[in-house]
Image 1 (cartoon, rainbow, N blue to C red):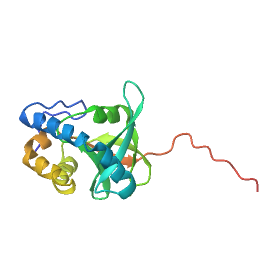
Image 2 (cartoon, helix red, strand yellow):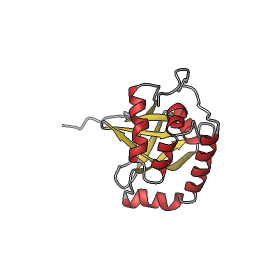
Image 3 (cartoon, one colour):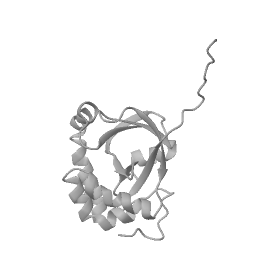
Length: 170
C-alpha cells in the first residue's frame, strides 16, 4: 500500500476512478446523518468524531464539519480517503482551525499535510482501525486507493498569536 512515488501531497490531490465515485456516494449518505453526528460529537463524545471549524479559502466564512479524529503515537490527524475536498483545501489554505467535541475541549490547531513516508503510512493504516463501521470496512476495501490518493494532515496545538501579558502591580 505504498503511495505513488510521483505523488506530490503539497499540491491538491484530485482522485478519479471507481473508488472516487464510491467515496463521493458514501459521503453524500453520511451528510444525511450530519446533524445527529454533530449532536453526538458535541454532547456525548461519540467515537472519534470531532467538529472541525475552519475559514473558507475564498470567502473567509467559518464552517464546521464533523470528522473522524485519528490518534497515532499521541498525535492527532484528520484526513480524507479520496483526495482533496472543500474542507481539506480550506484547512491547507488557512493552515489553522479549531477542533472540538464532548471529549476534546475547543483547541486551536495548525495543520501540516503529510507527505509519503512512514508517518503517513501509519495514519492510513489507522483509518482502517479507528473509524467506526461501516466506514472502516470501506476504507480497508479501498486501501490501495486511500494510500495513493488520500490526503492526511497532522494537527498540532497552535501557539496563541499576539498574546499581551500584563504585569501586575506589585
